[in-house]
Amino acid sequence: MSLRFTTQKTLEKLQQKAQKTIQRSLDQHIKLAVTGFSGSGKTALITALVKHLTTQANSQNLPFFDVVRDHRLIACKLVPQKALDIPTFDYHSAAACLLAEDPRWPPSTERINTLTLALKFRSRSGIRQHFSDDHTIYLELIDYPGEWLMDLPMLNMNFEQWSRSQLDVLSQSAYSQYSEPLLAQLDKFDATAQVDSSALNMLSESYCTLLKTLKRETKVAKLQPGRMLIPGDLAGAPIIQFFPLPNHDLVEKAGTQYEQLAQRFEAYKKQVIEPFYKEYFCAFDRQLVLVDLIGALNDGPATLVQTQQALRETMGMFKHGKSGVLQRLFRPKIDKVLFAANKCDAVAITEQDNLTRLLHELLCEHENELKFAGVEVDTMTISSVKSCQHKQVQDQGKTLNCVYGKPLNESQFITFLPPEPPDHVLSSSNWPDQGFEFLSFYPMPAYQGQLEHIRLDHTLQFLIGDKLR
Ligand SMILES: Nc1nc2c(ncn2[C@@H]2O[C@H](COP(=O)(O)OP(=O)(O)OP(=O)(O)O)[C@@H](O)[C@H]2O)c(=O)[nH]1
Ligand SMILES: [Mg+2]
Image (cartoon, rainbow, N blue to C red; front, side, top):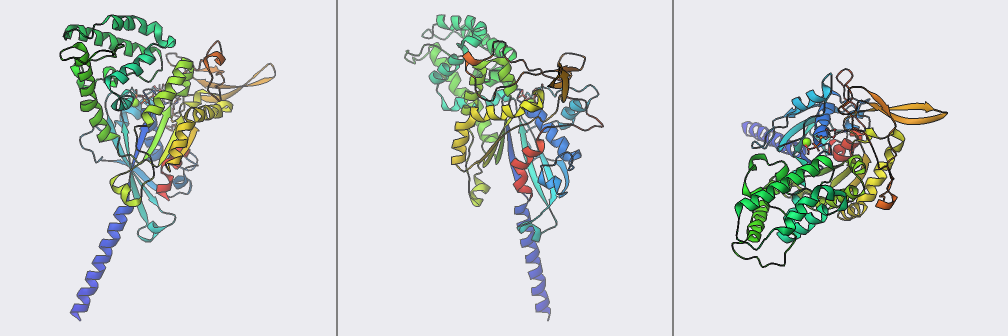
């Protein structure tokens, strides 16, 4: 009798344990890579995403996010992150900027930081339903300076290849007004001479100034090394003091300036980019690629082409493809990628689809490769934080689709007729003479503390909807 009782108890315990184990394996961690060059809107998007999921998760606000539409999302909250050595994303300060009476954009990011969101939900179907009423998935996000992303392709280059690719960009006529003085200095530089630290430092300084000018005046993404722009704790270290050289028909002789620069370049790859890549960029499950097409169009045809190249190069650094259940546990690969033309609120509502088509054309070759590798890919236009509203204006019997908002650095709201973005890549000769002049606006004041978005719900549905069934 007592033996039967004990056996039954043991069985019950075992059953509970098995249930817990299965439950734990169903509670999943999803690492979402929010990828994009500097100014593409990563920080604003992460802030908006937390705000909408934690305080605005209702079916009017997120109608295309199934778990919300079906009233199955119980709650969502920020939880302590697993990685204890990375600063926590300062959500409250970033949200305070967007929610202020006089809203501002959160500042540009200067270091890496992370956050984890726990989403508790009721399952609709499948195996989960049998084990528990509710389930939790943990969404991990990392925010970082966009410049550091642009460093990743350097891993596949030696000093000579890198010099060529960087000088290719700098010598484009669109940027020559800024780069000519430095290019002239580089032509005169004697790379075969013995190391002269002050000469190297002086030229590194000039190169750094040029990168900063290009960042301020243009939207060109390929500004390497990224740590020259956002040095973090490397400010002043020789490892970030190098520059591209035009002449490589030289023997890499010991003790020459050439050797010194090549060594700094290799050290930068090994000691700066590689650890960053291995620690933070290797193990993602899903990827959102934010692209600032509006900024590129404002800047001109050269920057649009540069954006396309830079996207191709950086995308090649991520591990994409489908992996089996067991592989996923140990060697995750990105199996869903969403390319999003961000900031579409600055374009008339009737023209927003043009941005999707343009982005699709820019990336179609790459999309094709991803799909072939078994990756699910989509392209859309979004705006994580609305900075202006659609407004129709009647003018001489015509209806004009305008936007209404407060332009950056101005104090009044205005109604503005934005240019029509092209739906395909224009060559320089087809580029309109007057160029494109989209305006940038402050975020819209949040009515009753509620932020507005465009297609953030579609974004969530595509990226994590399947994990919340
Ligand atoms: N219209 C519009 N503008 C946006 C949106 N998100 C960001 N912006 C603009 O883009 C700028 C850069 O946004 P961030 O979120 O700081 O971009 P980031 O990718 O984090 O940039 P780094 O931190 O420099 O890498 C903002 O200051 C805004 O001017 C959006 O949803 N709509
Ligand atoms: Mg940022």
